[in-house]
Image (cartoon, rainbow, N blue to C red; front, side, top):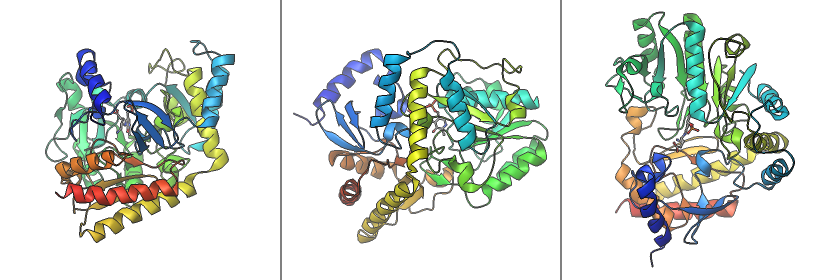
Length: 431
Ligand code: KE4
């Protein structure tokens, strides 16, 4: 009986009722091949699948589980809310003030914040707000950065940064595509060119200050500061999409790590502690344009939901109380060094990019600094690597262009096991 018999059976059934058998495309293993693994239980740094196989989890629900899954303080807080408060009201609740005040205390750019239910809602709302605030229509994003599935973001950067873009996804209208321009990550001249070509028409520049959706690509020294300066000069709203790197690379996010303050910040993942939460916030002068105070409409039935805010609040309180960042850095350094030792032993010069506890091993010898260098990676080799790691009980993102996340719950023994598995998987990927 295959190790994944039950997963395979469930996947066949799922495909009858759910497009591609999944509720989010990246879960379908399309880029690595094989059958998606159906998980049955999460606990700390581990997940167990429906066939009883246990894995060390380096996806962490795609970022939220910086503290591992089912953290006792978070589950206890959720139990309390379930028993003593409720699951939803559709009215204001005190918890909304508590998390808004806490986020404004933690994140340098936040003077006001609005809670939503996903990262996509956060980025969509932030862009609409920037357009309403400036009265301008166009936005600049960066090739390879992902900001959720809002129409304005699903635009392929055509060749070069000057192309106005063509809808990457059917259903995105040409009109929408024309308003999204793509620049090259880490290349401030590509941004200046677009700004000069569209003088006075750019409402916002939105960037992942640590890119985590093209694998991991750190911003080059000075790049974010140059973006800040350009946006200030041109009256463009600078949006840091910290849905993934927020509270991950530092408690105050990438903006506190690099000392660059955006006008708006989008958040998600960690501030939901594994439940559906997103948020956008920033300068009071801009946020005051959001309805019902202002005229830029934004709404959500379950925004500020008591259960989701409970998980998010407890996560933030633990991050503040326990400051796991030095320990996360220590662990990330051990893993990075172990992988590099293996690469050296095998005479391989693959590239590892890392910021804090998010990293990516690229199957290319080309330094990865933007989308075009990222796609030099050999995705076939990555696929073989992924499956060898999976067979050895290590669950990684099923795509070369995603991040690997270490949690506070990964022990040194877990890291040693991962380093050993990495050696075997590198051998397997070279066959
Ligand atoms: P959601 O709508 O998926 O909650 O967030 C969208 C989003 C926005 N901004 C950034 C920087 C993000 O990384 C994301 C979502 N990240 C992906 C992982 N690469 C979610 C995984 C998935 O699509 O299933």
